Image 1 (spheres, one colour):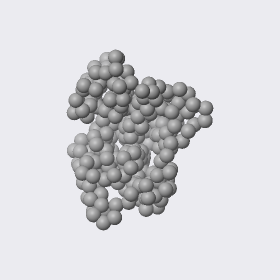
Image 2 (tube, helix red, strand yellow):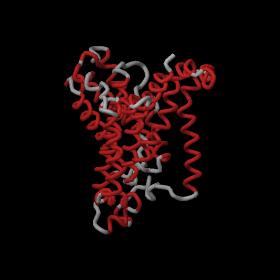
Image 3 (tube, rainbow, N blue to C red):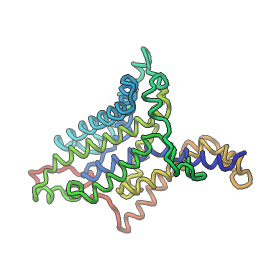
Image 4 (spheres, helix red, strand yellow):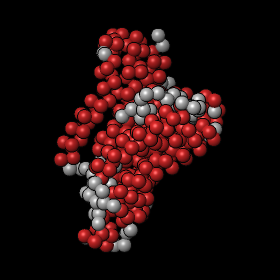
Length: 331
């Protein structure tokens, strides 16, 4: 068996499977930096996925699909903002409700359309061809990591660009620093003339829009095959945990999602790795498939414990006002 080919495919799968987590994590970081805790990532990604896929296919355009997914994700963010920022609803309950609502919309729309005429991705060249891998000159020729890291579809590269852009925005721009001030102490930010409500609305919508693109990616990665299970499949909840793992840093989120991508790729590549390296990795074939399915969530729990210990020792990027509603008349 071609050992180099197996390792290359494993690296490729790590990237392929972790990018939706990156979108969800970066989007949630932007939301939480405004001081709002949105636990509705799963539902937001589901709404972005189903509408992005449908509109993208009908328009026969990957770009339209991306824009539609962003727009529908942002609409979920707007609902969350109205309820928590304007109406002062409990953020935890609102987020959980949004997740349930989003999944309900996903299945309602999906089953309704599937009963009539579900759009098959391969019938729309503008989408299927737009989702094909793009070989980056020179870099894609590097052994093992070349194909694994530099021969992916446009949404993979877009996810990396968005993560780095959000990091730059939060740390190097005036508006980003104002957002962080709102997340740390909204009353103090308000007292120096920052429009707290506007900042929260804007960044909640943008963050949720980014989550929606991640959902759309997952739908495309599954070739738009709609069945009884959701395309998102728990990734939204893992993304919430990854925010803590990344210490609210979009650049570190890239590393964090690669770690989780490793464990997500194991079920796909375990048998190939065991056959290619029987002496060192042969034991992978003996692990029950059920354990592989549970592994990402087990790792999530371990990460939460480890990061909680780390945060108690200081150096946490947790916004001080996270989860606390701000009512201007109380300042």
